[in-house]
Length: 117
Length: 141
Image (cartoon, rainbow over all chains, first blue to last red; front, top):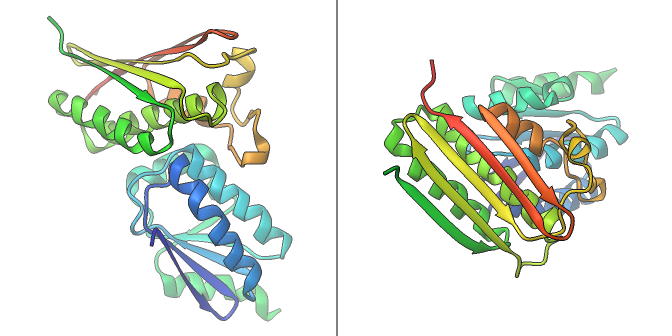
């Protein structure tokens, strides 16, 4: 599979395992949305560990999911972004919308914070 | 004689991976950095995606040509299609502008190509096609 999912509380972990280009984003988009809609999801944590390439199609994919999650009052966050991909993401301004955390544990603590109030 | 390659392929998204990998492999003889390789791959990926989505509107029998040449420490790249052409090039190059928001395009393709290139030129004629010429210096200090 080019994408795997795990649900912990209301956080959907999306583990992408492919190049995020036009070809693959068209394939993973619907399956990500299916998981967001079918399960009790509020936040999405994107694990980029197995992504070695990403272009503007990948940015479009993230922005599209961001809109869906914000509509549910949730947030999107990243872990494990490769250095060269992070540079490209910086250009896109996407880090103004989605935070990067050091690891999964930290991401869970931070994403869970808003929910307690 | 400068080394060159000339690739001719159809507008299917499967070919995006092939073409950016081929470009990266061709650029290897210039002893690129990891970042150079990423940038070359991204330039090709963005350009070919534009041909597929915009020039040929997902009709996979469209033809795309990529020419690459090495001139000293520069990679010269030409990406050519015979598709619909770009009506307003300035608008197309505006960051965040996309003619296909319904397909979740970010509108960043041209901006990224420009940022990663040392020189980029776009020639387009409606109904004839588009040619993009790029110069990318490798290992510039």
